[in-house]
Length: 138
Image (cartoon, rainbow, N blue to C red; front, side):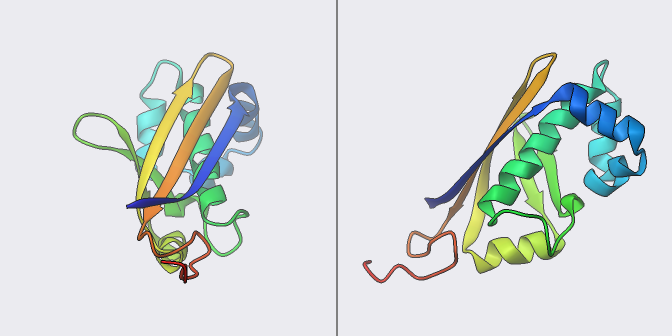
């Protein structure tokens, strides 16, 4: 596996909270049901929402930027057996990743009271670029 793309995003927790409180349907448009349950179960759910928002934005950057063509709920933050965050794609986001040769993801998220940050690394076949083009030099 070779790194094909890196995405990073930093968000203010307060801005995510205000956006969801101002437009409650944003919660369902941006987060899956399991993400919402996970975030709402915390004493400070807004930090968890913000970290997931940052993770989705970091993944979008790896997929070529912008959201046209797929929903934010097509990108889901899940956890492995040890609790480490992982990316699960569905729908058109999964199609775009496949088109770009992305087979696997590395994800790191962190937050403090005011800020949340995530870094996503898209991994795939070393003979492809993030744009899905074959590297002829190999």
